[in-house]
Amino acid sequence: MTRRMCLLFALALLCPAIVSAQSRQAEPAMTGVWTGELNRDGADSATTVTLTLKSDTAGKVIGTVAGLPNPAEVKDGSYDAKTGTLKLSLGKLNEPAVLLVLDGKLVKGTATGTVSGEATGTFRITRQK
Image 1: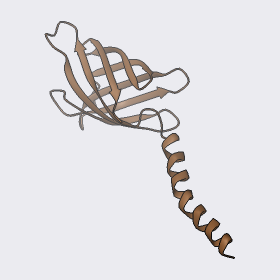
Image 2 (image 1 turned 90 degrees about the vertical axis):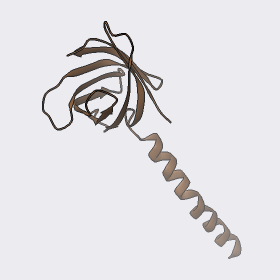
Image 3 (image 1 turned 90 degrees about the horizontal axis):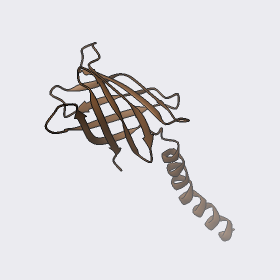
C-alpha cells in the first residue's frame, strides 16, 4: 500500500510539469513580445519598435506596436507556419486606416522583410524569451 501511495504522489507531482511543457510547445509561433527595427528608406536612423503579438493556430495575428510616432495596432495580420510567411497591416490605435504593411518571413525566432505604405524600407524583429 505504501509503495502505491508513493507512486501516486510522484505522478501527481509530474502531471503539472508535463501539462505546462505541452502548453508551451503548442503556443503559436507569433505569440509573444518582439523587438527590433524598422529601417525606412532615406531615414538617417532606424526606428526601434516593440510588438506584442498573439496568434492562433489558424494563423491570425493581432497585437500592438510601440515605438512609432503614435501607438499602433495590427489591423490585419497573418502567419503561415508551413512557409514562415508573415504579413502585418499596421495603423494608429483605434483608427481604421492601415498605414504600414510588414511583409516578411520568420526563421528561427527572427522575422525580416519589407515595409510598404506611408513609408518604405525593411524590418527585422526578434522574439524575446
